[in-house]
Length: 150
Image (tube, rainbow, N blue to C red):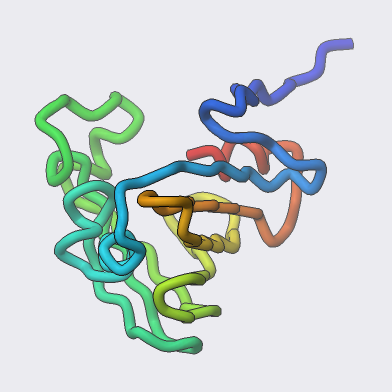
């Protein structure tokens, strides 16, 4: 019998897959914490490393994440993301936690991925900021680790 196993790099360097199927990772970033927070919630700053899009700064607010590979790097996108890069791709969700500058969470809906919840926590770590991110699909499946690791 052949099974289709999902292979995920579980090295703590990149993150870990939890029993629930969620992916969790930690990073130490240069502070202060307010600076890191601004790169999570401000459209123009977030667009320099991840994706653009508006965030209504409150629990229950709307979050739009606009993905376009060429806006964050000159490297060509992988073949699987070429169409998304050419046209861009918009994901909309709801901010579920907005507690500046320590906790930010939202649901991730669309783009062909299973719906998921993303939670980011920031805390001081000396002169750095510890960022902990957890992404969990709302309806777990065998494909969950592959999608949440993206």
